[in-house]
Every structure is written in C-alpha cells, then in structure tokens.
Length: 96
Image (tube, rainbow, N blue to C red; front, side, top):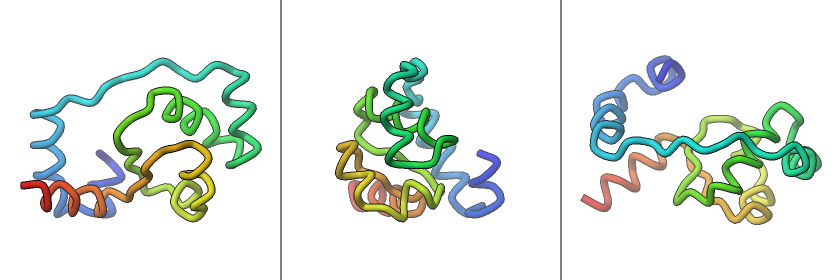
C-alpha cells in the first residue's frame, strides 16, 4: 500500500475496494532450491518473490518492480502474467 500511495495515489480507493471484496491469498515462502533456480533469471533479492509467485500460480503478479517488468523472458519462463498496478486496474475496469 505504501508504494501505491507514493506512486499512484489515485488508485488507492480501487485497491481498497478490491482487497475488501477479494482478499489476497497468502502463500508459503518458496523452497530454497526454487529460489536458487530463479536467481539465475532475476536478481538474488527478487528471486524468492518470483519463486513463490511461480509456485502459487496466481492469475496475475502485480508489481511495480522494474526487474520483473523489464524482461519478457521472466514472464515466459515463469508462466506468470506480470502487470503494473496501473495495467491491472485498467484490466479490472474493462471487466466491469
């Protein structure tokens, strides 16, 4: 929420509404061997996030982190649909 508040404050009401209507699913930390595997595709700091997301198989990974967004290979290798918060909100608006 802090990052959304700083970078896209206009999106806060929609995000609050989304989180209240569809609570996020919390998943386990990735296994160390999965994290190590993904560290070859992305920086070491983001590898645990990518490993956990790939294991959880979410509909979308919403992030503002340029490491995830700047390489289409990461989405292809992981099978994740990676979107910025703004892209995700646009997608939600289209579905309404």
